[in-house]
Amino acid sequence: MPLRLDISLLSERYDAGGGEDPRLAEWPPHPARVFAALRSVAGEEELEPLAELECLAPPLIHASPTTSVGERRTRGYVVTNVRANKGGHQTHPARTAGFRQRTSSLPEDARVQFDWVDDSSLSDDVVAELDHLARRVPYLGRSTSSATLAFSRVDDPTPLPGLTTYEPTAGRGPLNIRVPYPGYLDELNALYREDQPAWQAAGPRSRRFYREAGAVQTSDEISEEISAMDVFNSPYPDLVILRFEELRPSGNLVSIFTEALRRKVMGQTQDPLPPALHGHGTPGLPHVAYLGLPFVGNEHADGQLMALAVAIPGLEHDERLRILRGILGNDPERDVLLRVNGFKQSFRLRYAPDETRPFTSTVERWTDPARTWATATPLVLDRYPKDGDLAAVVAESFVNAGLPEPRGVEVSKEPLMDGAVRLRPQELPKRCQGRLYTHARVTFDRPVRGPVLAGAGRYFGVGLFAPEYEEERR
Image (cartoon, rainbow, N blue to C red; front, side):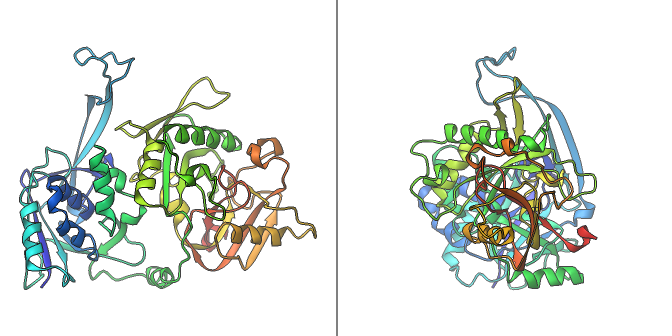
């Protein structure tokens, strides 16, 4: 019998930012958010039911159609939580006031249901314990969004009248939903022990695309689902993107900015530093990579850096969380202030993974699977081509980086993608100066999921590739 979670929004609105960003509306409620709410009311002796729940396949979601959801936006200045020496608030010493915009969802029907159809591994006792936790959850999202939750088994998984069913899809879909996964509870436990917010556990592993059940798939979506079964995954499952909020530097300054970001992250990460962060004593294993994300692949692309990013290889969750906190620091608003050599002013960056624009600053732009990839920043060769065969050395660079050997390689002194960054020899990272470098386009036998990094400078801001599709090259 399917496991069902019934959610009733008592105020008939849902006050929650879009996954992690409070400026965007989240609808329908994400299962990962509900799971975090259950964890927040659970004692140490009540965690086993949650460990079993996270191992189930993502649930069906029954909710008001997204087309019928209204939104309400609120704007204003609120007191920040962090004390600062320069804080000058009139009534709250050592605090400042920051401008905030928040959005609420106003659904036509304030009821939501989750159905785990295949829950055969859960006993009746576990379901009863989950229900006991659910009834103690006071709200979902912000505290102004009071709710009641209840678990039960149902003979008939038919949703309430008026609700639309959304199901997970193997390919892309219109809804990007965060769901729990095996290991999610461990990440939440580590965060709760250190009094850190739960959104830090929301990495790419929690993302699943959903679509309306019964909707007719397009031929492109069907072919994407088929090809998704044979995708080669990047050695970097996590990509943390920090968007420039105001000033956007020129792409030829990429190595200066990635070096500044590297210094900041290493300075903010708690000792002892994870080996993946400094790269010493881990031969053959990928290190943390620092990237500049230029505006490329569009006829209007100018190569400006829209964001900086940190690519994190597959690590144990404790190491991953330490690095994530090293990236974001202690600012609960997820702002990063970066000082860069040669500039008097600091650069403000923001971690806002659920913002969908500008597209250059999204994870999808750099990770969507593709067979063809082209350099956004030049690739520095791992070795000198003694026989003059640049293409062979470029192909070898991918194998050295833990990626498949491409079946086709095109090299060029000039960029092969609109907006791709041009660098002079002195603008390369210091560790790469004196080496040969080139732009390249490579084609693989099967789709490869990004980020795609290759070459001797891949950890320091060069050798970044962007996916390229046939329709973009016509």
